[in-house]
Length: 304
View 1: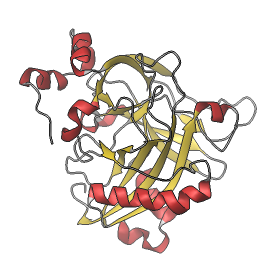
View 2 (view 1 turned 45 degrees about the vertical axis):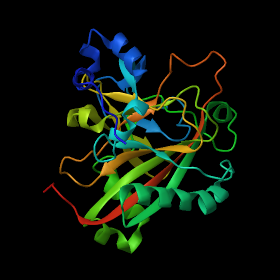
View 3 (view 1 turned 90 degrees about the horizontal axis):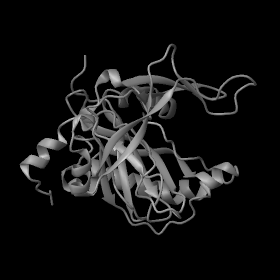
View 4 (view 1 turned 180 degrees about the horizontal axis):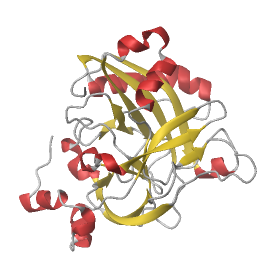
């Protein structure tokens, strides 16, 4: 059921967070937090991030990031009002009996079908294909254990107008060109492996508050190819949300690309952040994100 908010609060939510003199009061009223988000700063040259240890003398990452203060609103207050086509993300109740998240083969065999069914249910798509996943747990990443990675504490979006369609071409073989003639999307499914999430929760930026100029194409350099994501440049109009203390039976769906250009959300930037309300003995966040190609029967709308 959608939650009804007082008109005065609803108007405040539509204002750029950095401009409000009453942010702290609003944060308390909505159970939000004042925090910082790492944004890409203006720089010369195209940013890039190596996905392996680069050659000696080559930095792992180019581009400068800076922390900007923002209001991160409690998205649970608005749960019934959020949608993939509106803000670009939603929270789904998604119980699972699966527990072997550190075993990639088991994840692919047993967890991927659950993700595909969930995304199909939430989007009404005709077909969903999970194509990869990441487990994130900072202590395991530091020990180079189980292939885990650290939470990404930079505002970003996983796919771009170029790399979204390219992923279909890379993965779908002879079907790709026919599939690209109809609407498709890339949707991530993010779930805590242990709950509740006490530190490094995921912040989600309302796609409707992101201007095209805020999205900066960034190279992901692999040993055998170069991918492309968007880094996010600061804009005071951005509206940030999070779902506090997520449990293992919950999952966030994030739209990282949509081929439709008719006003629907296309790029929901996101990133982990340091929650000032985390307890001092907070358990390190452990999560899994699965990426999906989502195909619809409808023709591509908008565009040229």
